[in-house]
Image (tube, rainbow, N blue to C red; front, side, top):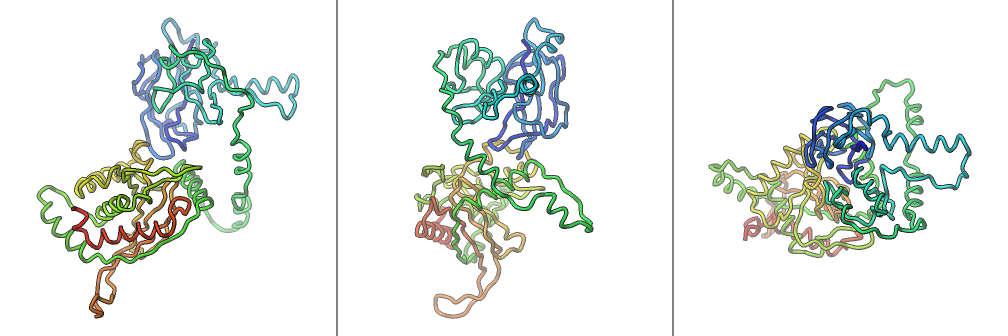
Length: 437
C-alpha cells in the first residue's frame, strides 16, 4: 500500500510551513535518512529526511507552497511491487478524514455532543499532544493492536518508525475518558479577547492610505509568544549602572594580542561571559519555569537575541561559563551569521536559562525586555556613554557608564536572588580580569 509522506513538525511551535524546495522528483528511489525536501518553519529553513524507503510515486504539494499544515500529505511513496496506478486507490488520509464527517452528516446528523473520530494521520496521546509516526509504523501498530502513545520514537525528532513497532508488545489502550484535560483551558484561552478585530481596525482608518502587510510564520510566533509571556509571567525589574573603563582598557589589550589570530572581542562577548559566570556564582538563579515546578540548571546556557529581517532569533551558547572569551566570540559570530540566513537548527535556538538583549549599538540608553519563557530572566543592555560620576575619593570625574535592566520571572527568582545575580554580573564586568581566573 502506498505510504503518505506528511508535512513534519520541525519545531515545537510549528503548526504550518512552506515547502521551499523538493530535493527529489517523481520516480526517484529514496532510503530512510535521505534528504527529500527543504521546509521553511516559523524560524528557519530545514532539510527534511525520509523515514521510510521506496519510490517517489507522486508529489502532492508543489515547491513554494505556503501554509501547509503539519501532518498534511505532501507526497506518496511506493513500496516494492507497487506502481503509480495504486496511488488512486489509496486516498490521502487527510482527504478521507475531511470527507467522512461530511458524508455522515448528510446521511444522519449526529448529536451536537458526539465526539468526532480522530483522523488516522494525526494520532494523539492521552494529554492531547500529537503523536508523530510514519504511515508504515501506524499500519503495523494497527495490525498488532498497539497503542502508539505507549511507544517511544527513534526517528527524526522522535518520530515513531517501523523498527519501533515491529518488536513492541501490545498494551491496553488508554480509556476514552482520558481525553485531553487541557482542551477546555485551550478553548477558554482561544476565546479570550485579544484586542479589536481586524475589520474594526481597518474601519477605523477608512479614508487613510495604508498598505496591508501579511504576517509570516516568524512574526506570528513572536506575537503569540511575547503576548503570552507579558500576560502570564509576573515580571519585575532590576536596574544598575556599570562602569566600563576597566573593561574597555582590558579589551583593547586583549585584542592587540589576539590580532595575529584574527580574533576581535566585542563588549558583548564580555557580557555573555559575565552572565555565564554569574549564573554559576548565584546557582539558585540558574533555573527555568516548567509549569508546576522549577528546573535548577547546572550548566550556564546563555541565549543572545539576534535581530534579523522580519524578526529575531535567540541562539544559545551552551556551557558558556566553561569557554574562553575567544571561543565565545567565534561561536557567537557563527550563530549570528547563520541566524540572519535562517539556517539555525532548533537545538541551536532552544533552551538556555537566561537571555541577553543588547541594543546599545543602536544608541539606546536603557530599556525593559520581555522574559522569553521558560527562561527565568533577560538582561537588557544599553549603550556605554561618558557620564559624570563621583569617584571613591569624593571627587567628580568622568567614566564610561552602561545602563542595564534585568527583567525577572518572579515565579523562579525572588528579589534578593535577582539582586545578587545582577550584582555578580556588575562585579564581573567592572573587574574583567577576574573572569579569566
